[in-house]
Amino acid sequence: MSGHSKWHSIRHKKGAVDVKRGKIFSKLNKELMVAARMGGGDPAGNPRLRQAIAAAKAENMPKDNIERAIKKGTGELEGVQYEETIYEGYGPGGVAVLVEVMTDNKNRAAADIRYIFNKRGGNLGEAGCVAWMFDKRGLIVFERDQVDEDDILEAALEAGADDVITAEDQFEVHTDPAMLESVKQAFDDRELAYAMAEITMIPQNTVKVEDESQANQVLKLMEAIEDSDDVQKVYANFDIPDEILQRIT
Image (tube, rainbow, N blue to C red; front, side, top):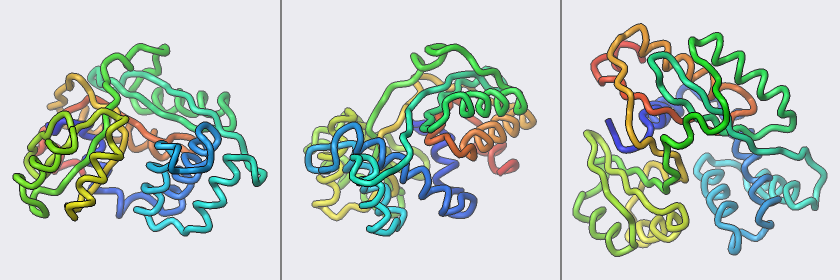
């Protein structure tokens, strides 16, 4: 099990094939708008907006789209007002699931998330029922075959990162969320290319799902939640053994 949510590893590997670009752009557009509305349209003074712009550029979102979303967020252009909310619940096998939603209709979003949980063998819970099981962290992921471990360790130490975790096929650099931008810049300065850099929720402990049928249910639940139009991100604390994961993905 890697240090962060195993779903994020699966999603990252499958994303290029499974996720339509239009849906990716929709999620990025919402994040740009909300980040600009909450912290202003100048990325120099708005860390969340800087991260949103970086994520949009990483997905090759056109510059005009990025600028338009920011202007909608600041009110310079008319646009839909999105609200952020979090839903919490349990999946098959007692897996904790945390869902970040950005929506213009909370009633619709709540009904949709509840329906998905019920249909996929989970249970939507009360606010706070699983959030305490996760820590908000900055995360930078490197593919092991693309970088030298000593270079990563040295740069992370100098930049003030909290930890570097070595997994089977990747290195994970964990930071305080407020330090993500500066640590990422340190890697950029050394031309160390990372596969992913984001603010994420890392589970404190994991639930091992060793039954193949149950593991498949968990992944189907996660996929259905993430496919919902109002969902921005979904986190879970499951650990499916790789030999099972290879058979069901």
